[in-house]
View (cartoon, rainbow, N blue to C red):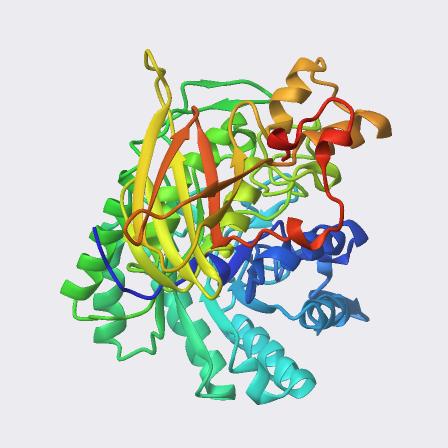
Length: 499
């Protein structure tokens, strides 16, 4: 498909992370800085904003009297640090402070309360108080740049008691009206549902429309793993849908939103990955990167945000991880080791702003200095020959092109495989960690290609589960600038073999 479209990058708008309280740890920001230096994310989204870990809501009892007290000190530390790192919050309102909750039902090892408020007026007061506090502390113009999402996956009983739709609709209405009484220009949205419950789309939009409620954007999650094939205390095994399925799913969501009377309403995917479980080994593999490449190549035509869940394996929803590689969601494994999917995002960030050509295996773009293309080869079931060949042609004025290629596949930049070969050490020593860090570096190749009739023809062979970035630059040979250069004087080299 030939095109001159601009390349949108919704994957760089937001990224997910573990619960808000982990932002108090030094490790959190060390890992984030490593990712942010490459990705330049605008927002962070995570659970647990109002959880008891941060002490946001406390109840004092004194001489027979009861007082609800708000404590924003930890949130202030967190949001100050966030903004200092040039990233803003994609606020997820939840979970319920136990002091305001109607029940004791919780989710995750750290026990996020999933019940509606026991007193809706108290919930309103909390939302208003915290919104005012943020405006007082950071200024109304800053807070108006934030995005506010009501709850997380209320279509699942694990996250919202009984998946009660009516109760969620009430929560949405109460929350957004409480916020907007403080400032009417804040950006609000929901319902943050996951796949399999898209009947919520029409129901939610009908409720919002009937009640004349604000809705600045629609949020949904996207995971494409099938029901688990095997679950152990430490691992969660799943197969993946076909690589075209994520894009098809997003197109259907877009169609339903438009048909429900909200054409063009911004669609934010506030969580996406292959598996929805933080103990699924596929997350650590090159397949995870190769599988998601097609989705990233198409996403700019479909959504405003495609937020990867999550940037780091500092993630504790299913207890503290028990091994170095454990199937975590992160772009970075423990000790900041880049996984193959980290390189997928880094490669996409290297692409230019104008699309020359896009297929289901390759995306070619123009850059200020030349061109860049990204190609991928996910292999869900082994074939007789797992390799594929991608051919690309593009106009090229002038002389030869320098071709710089970076490769990730099962045999390159695959620290998970090396860790397996080392005997899967649960808690490796520092020397082993350093070795794994070396194993995470992409393979680099450099060649020179001559254009033919003003056309540059490339033939790229991709290994199983490979992602490859190819950058094309004008070639300049500076060898004549060196007086007396003759590599035949280097033992083992003849001048014609010079690199």
